[in-house]
Structure formats: C-alpha cells, structure tokens
Length: 180
Image (cartoon, one colour):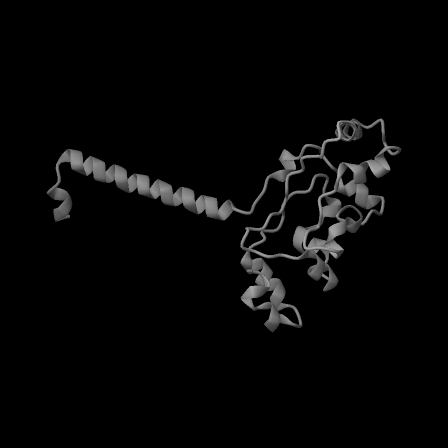
C-alpha cells in the first residue's frame, strides 16, 4: 500500500490502466485458447450439404470421404465426385443447381473444415478406421445432421480417454504417436 500512496494521481491512474489492460489481455488469450480448434463451419459452408439425406439413402461416410481407409486424411469430396451422382439425381433442386454451377465453372467447392488439428498433432484416419474406430466416435452422429458441425472437442484429453480404452494403450501413450 505504501508504494501506491507514494504515487501521484496521474501515476496511479496509469498503473490502474496497465493492470486493467493486462487483465483484458489475459482474458482474451484464455478465450482464444478455449475456442481454438472449434469451428463454426456449419454456418460458413458454401453449400448446405445434407449428410442426413445421404445417410438415409445408405451412402456410407467412406464413399465421399474415401481417404479414411487409404491415407491420414479423410478427404473432402470434390465437385467431380458429387456430380458423379448429381448429374442425374435431384437436378431440379436449388442446392444441386448451385453444385452444378461449381462444376460448370470448373471451380472446387470451397468447403470449410469442421475439424482441424493443430500443426503439432499427427492424426491418421487410416489407422483409426483399421482399428475399428467408427466415424461417430470422433465426429458425433453426422448421419443425423443436416449440415455437419463440430460436436466433439478434439483435444488431448479426448484422445487420451479413448486411447486408455484400447488393448494396446501402453503403446498409444507414447507421445510420438500423436506428436511428430
């Protein structure tokens, strides 16, 4: 208290502003850390792709996201893949006409990622699918979603909780499995 009482009014005001400014920065940084990895991709998608309709027709996740069994990435479907069916199916639909516009302009659909890992995390879809992990275990019930949205927070705790349930959990606790 003696330090503050020895300051002029102007110095006290400046010190108070520095403290308040520091607190604001700390709160902003904390909010950024809490929301990092989250996406509002559902509201940002260029087309309102309806996962539910496709799932009801019996189309499996792997048909469009064919990379899940072959590579680390699931693959975001191309216009060509979509138009393989939609040159003939629901061509009168407004959304299919928008899709066809991308096809005619030879433009990729600028999909927004719903889930994205930080650069320091290595994640391989292929190894998870080969181990019997279902799409829903990490992505929620996408088959009942109209537009996909993030329902699971992919953080280290989420992954470690799942790894703890596996038969080879000791090997999965090696940091190098996910951090390369």
